Image 1: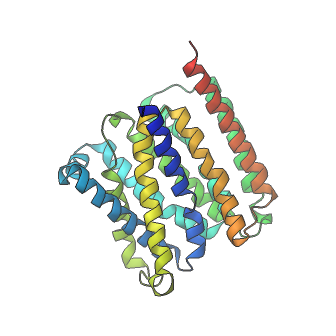
Image 2 (image 1 turned 90 degrees about the horizontal axis):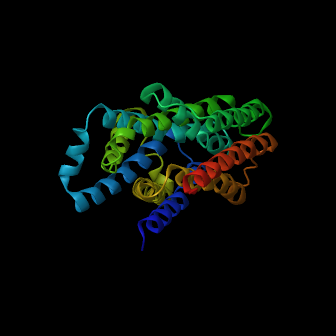
Amino acid sequence: MSDHLRGLLLTILGVLFLVPDSLFVRLIEAEPLAIAFWRGLIAGGLILAFVLMREGAGAVASVLRAGPQAWAYIVFFGISAPGFVLAVSLTSVANVVFILAAMPVFAAIFSRIWLGEPISARMIWTMLGVFMGLGVILSGSHETEGASWQGDLVALMVSFLFAAALTAVRGLRNRSMLPAVPVAMIGAACLIAPFADVMGPLREYWPLVLAHGVFIAGAAGLMVLGPRYLSSAEVSLLILLESVFAPLLVWYVIGENPGAWALAGGAIVIVVLLASNLVMLVRMRAP
């Protein structure tokens, strides 16, 4: 199997593991911080066990000694993980995943600010289109059942933070950041614990809580390993699958209608990103 095919399979599988994330948050009827605690603790614990078996304790220590970039990734990723749960609890799933789809645009902005990378004409047009779609989503939140501008703002914050995390480790491309993932997840869970009724979800929903953690562990691990063999354009295109399938899954299982505004704005965001990444992919493969 070629490295490229391996990367495609790992990334697609990681995206499929990620699709039910918001559905689990909906099905587990507990306070968001408690859900975020178990999500981070179980997923982080499973990934940590895998890292220790595969690479040994030295891998974690090595990441912790990797400098400010690695620590920035840990902090930003650690905050964004429970932030996602909070966003889903405050607004519609469709709003959250469509807003998170804009992450590559924010990453390009951070790359310009922190790394001095120029923003191409293609990316400028992409930003304009994505921001138009986000504007449609935000403007319709007051008319969509289950949506709220507060939750939309939290989703925007999560998108910013995760984009910042990805930008922070751009200089560590030759180092596997998988050992940093459990540090971020377990660290966030420990900080959450004093402020949440962590035993609440276990009384009735422990099978869902366990499954949630397993799915997130699989998604996080695969999404760190797979993209190492792919271009950024290919990864971005595959991640868009989650933005399409997640709200459809929630709509099918529990009947949460995304609403016309979210569908319209989300369609703009996805089509713009799809076109932008296809253009990048074609240019990369042109002779």
